[in-house]
Length: 172
Image 1 (spheres, rainbow, N blue to C red):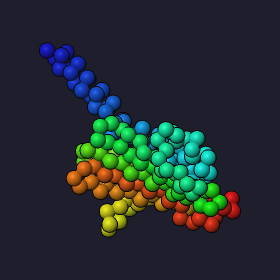
Image 2 (cartoon, helix red, strand yellow; image 1 turned 90 degrees about the vertical axis):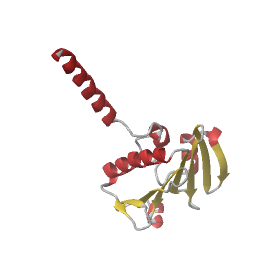
Image 3 (cartoon, rainbow, N blue to C red; image 1 turned 45 degrees about the horizontal axis):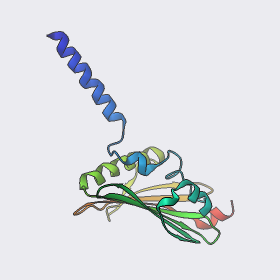
Image 4 (cartoon, rainbow, N blue to C red; image 1 turned 30 degrees about the horizontal axis):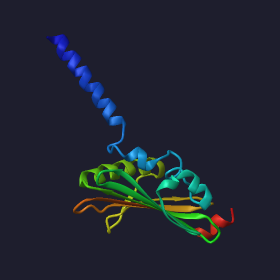
């Protein structure tokens, strides 16, 4: 009997360790897409570089200074990614919007991104308008990430990744 209890405890403990190591939302890795940059894209990339990273099949709108992608996740769930470019063809803003049929899915995705941003940029700040904000400043560029879980009747998460000091990116 003691042996069975020990085995059950061991199984429970291993399961707990495995479940704590991953993300909270099953779609996090797909939406994040890469450990590098944001979806594998870096601020300052040109439009052609971004097009090589994203899937052309889901490109819904293309202009000389703008790309917009719509990705289905599964029934009732999807996300959009929009990229804004300067006149010099430098990416300066990425906007990710995720739609879930479940408010809980938006919350777990929010927590996954929050953990990623906290690890990369330090503890984020909570703004009065409900946004969580992370900043990174260097000699070359300053960026800001703003994220909000604005779920009401359905799951809605918005993340923007913005270059704050545009002139310095063009002198690099």
